[in-house]
Length: 299
Image (cartoon, rainbow, N blue to C red; front, side, top):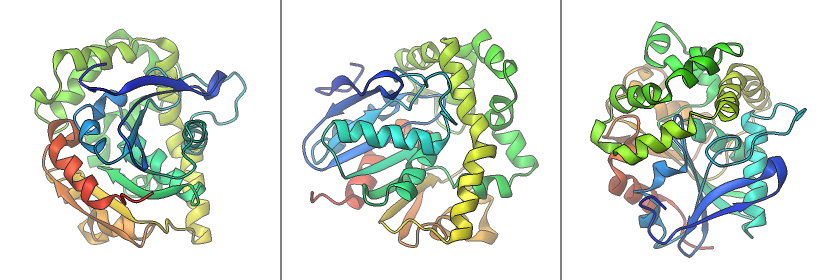
């Protein structure tokens, strides 16, 4: 397994609930979730450091990487709620009825939805370079459109975005690796190939697009219901964001990224970190240290 040391590659669940994970270490359970256009491989530099204190479970999101696609007729299969539910079931299959979760980018949105929907399961939450979907959409402007092209492109009706991505998946990976603030050397050739290979499967590209399509629709609606009901994340929450990115510069009037998150998670604390959007890949030792200092190490 690429740079994961003694981690084991396993699959749990059956049918459309099958989840692929890399697992290693001992201690309280910790679930790590990736963003776009990554797979669980994004944690290759972070996970082995965390495994000294935790049982670390690096999952491919449902429908992505090597995890199963949704079943035909499954309702809202790639909403963050549905994805979170499948991942909670996978962790239960592994014997983890309670665990901490950390998510980057799209995985961060699955992680906070998991914390909202399963408060008795999630012990602690970490979100990396992301704000809640509802807040992001409410604040979207020309900067958003120009800076985050996947939001608008990938959420267009099928089959346009699927056909464009499948035409040259390597170009999608290279653009994100080289244009989103992270040094290109954070993505070795074998990692780039792995990410591009994951974007070469038509069914999985469709699943990724469906997840993007869910964001301004059902995901936003779920957030709106929770906000109206005053539901909050009542567990320790860590927020890390790119020190040179949008979350460091765009939302000063809202108290920055941390101010936005504290409206959802009153216990939230956090800080900016260097390394661009993909700082977990460019600064793995730093990210691991921040997570280790935050996560509860008791069972």
